[in-house]
Length: 282
Image (tube, rainbow, N blue to C red):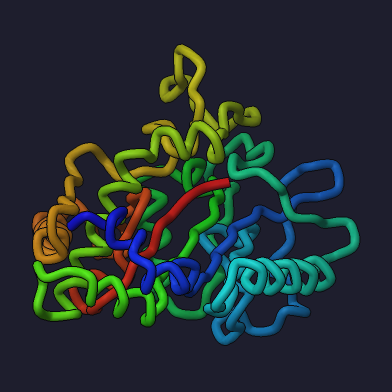
């Protein structure tokens, strides 16, 4: 599949920028002095279980801002700005959102990091499991998830320029898997240019788990929030990707599919059809 040649076709060019976007942005709440807050999720936001745009991630101090799906980058950024404004106005005047992916100064004792006080007991149990498996300090890292899908008209035009696939669904799946592999191939450069997080505040590392030399991105290295080395998933085909995920769950290397923390993830795993969810960091 020569996507570069396909996208150069005249009938494809008018649709090249057609896509759907979404952003999920995590941020720690801190005092104006940069210390982690001790307060609960902002009450003015309302019940976090039902709020479509402002929720809580791992800890009680970690906001997650979620945009709706949009048809342009400008629109999704406008939504994120508006949600960010609402979140900030809902917080105490002496609180703000920490602007970095690496967390602020953490409590001296890990047990003082408070897991999100969610209503569903299963959600709390899952976070307790993550705390045991990865440690609470690594869970305090925040990031940005970029959700992306090509526009249907663009996919249709690309499909009509080729003869390798007779089914549009098969073509679409093959297209997304190739894009995923290309993203992973050039991930080192994208991280180098846009995902640098070389510094951490005190108390992120313990006395043992500490780099001995500079790291361009703590967040995306094994010092950050990543799966254990024995979790391996292939992006060769969607079938292989789904089977590998299921195998990791069956063997106990992952508790469930959502514990797979790769730079790029297919939304919904084997239960979905066509999807693509690149994940990056601040």
